[in-house]
Length: 110
Length: 115
Image: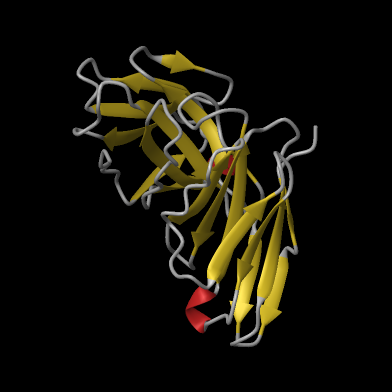
């Protein structure tokens, strides 16, 4: 399985952009990059996923390095509700379960 | 629409008793997963069901743990002779297809406390 490295914690001011980095240097060519987040006392929530190209949705943007060894989740304007643990997970195109690491705990300051 | 539903939301049991945890996935989702999350820790994969294929049980920590799924609907996770180290939040997730193709939708979990 591909291994990931994420900062243990990050802090952001409200309404500022947030860039959450993830290194996945052992990712294989067919692994998607998934991002999930977990708000306090809730189950994880899907954020975004991509393979090679940058991806945008209503929640966030995902910037994937050209060599695919790293990616960055971008929250364009952090709100207090974005305070959560963010997980970066390489996943295969098959049916192998996603392996969650410890993620990055994002704190948002008003 | 309805999301993944888990019951009970909280369960307190005495050491040595058996417990059953239930998961109702989103209708039409072929894949169902169970994870465990101990306090302050990340998610630990337990078991995975995909359609009519044999389940992937590689994450079950011991033979005290088992799970069943009826067709593409409800799943039950059973823990026999519970131990204190089984205390955790048990999370269920479903997805329309495989994990590389479609997102996982999680329930809010069952918090199990073994006294």
